[in-house]
Length: 404
Image 1 (cartoon, rainbow, N blue to C red):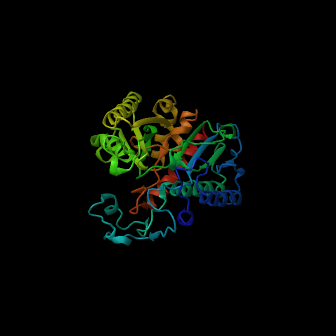
Image 2: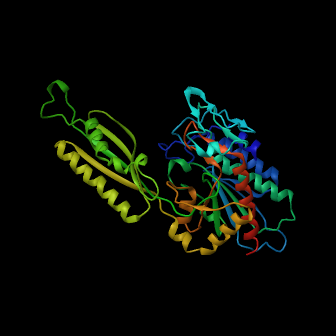
């Protein structure tokens, strides 16, 4: 598992949410091709790399379990663009001494500020050198799935039903499985390995929208601008300032949603603002979208010759209802955690996974921990014992689904 992970993070797979094509970056193809060949080498069946960079592979059920419903396991290939994912130099610490870890750029992993890190004294972990993110989100999930698959293939006495492995591109863009080959998927249920610390089990997530807000101003020489100029840059800035600070990512947690301005750009004549909207409740999301329209009118009132257009677009929906409709999945999950010696900790995802979208498409897909911390940052690290625990949970899930 560890050598695989260290190999995978070496691939530059940063996705680009500004690119509409799937995949949005060429590096994702490189890892997808490598995973395809690795799956073939392990002995997986029906290994396929689609025209849009989805890797799909299957493992037939063992004797007597060929007709058990297929179960899938999913992780994503790309890494977030918030921090550089190029030239990742992972540091493997076999036996952490419990002291501060100095990183590049004056960054520090400090056990006094991070209780989880302090608890890993004497244990193995992998962290960045501070010049990039690590990529445990979600290459830890890929490594765990691949390690569990190899374990099953090397131990044929372990009975299991048909398995499906799915590795996806562009999860971090929030597009929600564009070009996903749903017609080729056989899984009756699926699990993403895309969570955080030990024991995390997530069956609900945000409803997610992205809003593209356009500002049309009126340009003229600034020396003769009185009563004429409508500065689109000022319009966009005024709009961004109206987004409630008490409803921002840095001001909320738990079940509280937020507005998050992601990018702003423009000139005197035109400007654009991208805003992410997140809420666990659909009514709450409707309120947020209405809020964006109200802010638009307020800005237009300040800039009479300007125009503001709001275009919200769905990214993914809360998976809670559809997973609750399959209570047997939760029972199986809890038994798998128990069998693996892991205490499950149910929590909402303050974000989403490809499983959120797959659930919406009709295949319920809860999310399981991978052992990572500080995702999307230069302080990212992953626990090796917790990665191994995720593998154990995965194997126990496979056994239990084989009993169906």
